[in-house]
Image (cartoon, rainbow, N blue to C red; front, top):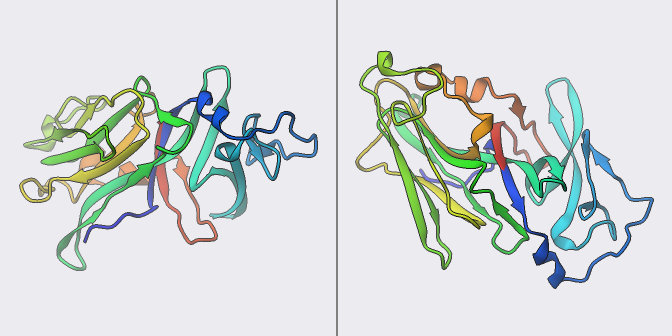
Length: 253
């Protein structure tokens, strides 16, 4: 059953377009009382936490309580997306992006589909076409990334493998792993799998697809026949008050 879930996450690096902020009323100088850090992340202007602390509504950050193993921590969120870093020098933010999955569920003896849609088209942010790549992992996996707005963009990649011996660590050229570029200025995307013609083979129970920061990823052969792609992720999302939480991987905006 297909569903859009805030479950598997990945870190994305996104290009910050400050010009869009000029369309809305701005705070000239934030109050010195404004909170400037959350979860070890510096929240620098034009971003801000709280009323009258950011340049405009599109830069409002919330510092949310997250339940993790061992206790509670606070982490910064822009909308429902967690921030890892804000760089005014590079004009980027790093944030956590969701991983779409197509996996065999042994309890129901069926394939389960969980896909992700991200819409930042009405915000000042666009994904970096230089630092991000659409990545798919699996054997006999066909994954698509689409922009269903007026740009009508669609691309994808195919990942196949005949045996585990064909796989190589660090290689993502179509055998067990594939990557493709995204267009410049993309602020909306939807991920899907071709479930009719291609499905995960006996070599692995899952196929994965995510828009992620290319420099943060290196393929491992164990991603095919184990759950290492999720289990070894350093980005544990924890659980927020809405009950959402899991592991994730990186991307740039």
